[in-house]
Image 1: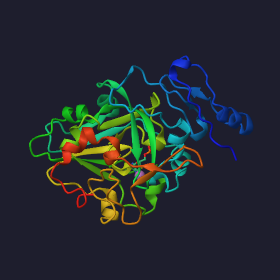
Image 2: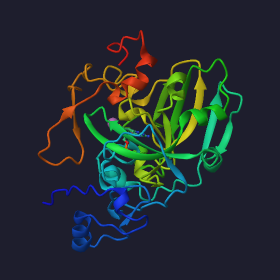
Image 3: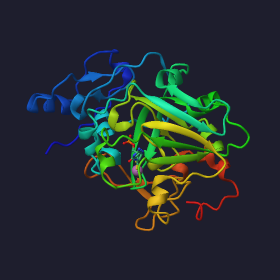
Image 4: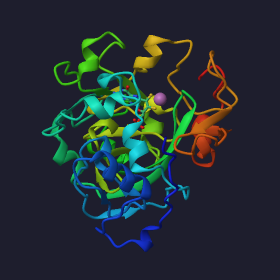
Length: 323
Ligand SMILES: Nc1nc2c(c(=O)[nH]1)N[C@H]1C(S)=C(S)[C@@H](COP(=O)(O)O)O[C@H]1N2
Ligand SMILES: [Mo]
C-alpha cells in the first residue's frame, strides 16, 4: 500500500500553470493510467489531480484573505475524495463517484421570506457581483475528523445584504436542491429531503461566514457542493450545507435536517466544542485527514480555533444546553 507523500512545495516555488506532479500522483498516473490531466492550480501549493473526477476551471481574480489560517491545506485528493454528501450516498467516496454527472449549471436560487428583495436569482447574478476571496479554513466534522480547506468564496453577509432582510428576519435558512433524478441518495429515505440548515442573522452576517464557489482556485467540484455551498468554519461541518437552491429569512428558528433526524445528538447551534461530547463519542480530539496512518489525534479547539472572532456571538448562552 502506498503511503501519502508530504508534498509541501510552496506556491512561490512553482510557476502558475506549471504542471506539477507529486511523487504519489506520478506513481498513480503511471501505474493505473488516470484519465485527464494532472494540473496545478494558480493558487494551490499541492498537486491537483483528476483522480476524484473532473477538475474545474481556474477562477479569475481571486484575492487572498487575511481571515485564512496559516496551516497548510489538505491535498486536492483528500478534499475531493473524502466527503459527506448523503444526496450521493453515505460512504466517504460515494460523492466523488456518484456526483460526477450532476450538472450544477444552470443554477437558480429561490429567495423568500422576511426581506424586500425576494425572487428567483441566477447563480451568475448572485456571485459575479462580488469579489472572490480565497479563505483557507479548518473544517471539523461532528464525526471527529478534520481538514484544512482552501475555499474560494464570497462573504455570506454581502449576499444577504442584497436581499435586504427586514426587521422581522431573525434567522436565515438554506435548502439543498431537491432532485432525486439527479441526486441518487434522495431516492432513499436516509434523511428527510431536501437537506435544510440555518443560522441566526448575527451568525450569517459574521465576516467568517462565506458562500463557497471554488476550491484551490478552481470551480467547486460537485462532491464539495457545487455550484454554491455554505461554509461556517466554527461550527461542525454539517452546518455547511451544499448545493444551495433556496434561501429564506424567517422569524422562527428553522429545524435543520440533522436536528430533525436526531435532536438529542445534533443541535441547531452545532458550535465546535471540545467540552461538550456527542452522546456516543468524545469531541475532545480529532483525526486530521491525510496526516498519515500513524499520526495521532490532535486536540479540538473551542469554536474550532475561531473563538477570538466568534465567542462574543454566544455570550450568556449555555453552550451545554444549546449544543
Ligand atoms: N446537502 C448536504 N450538505 C452537506 C452534507 C450533506 O450530506 N448534504 N454533509 C455535511 C457534512 S456532515 C460535512 S462534514 C460537510 C463536508 O463537506 P466536504 O465534503 O466539502 O468536506 O458537508 C456538509 N454539508
Ligand atoms: Mo460532518
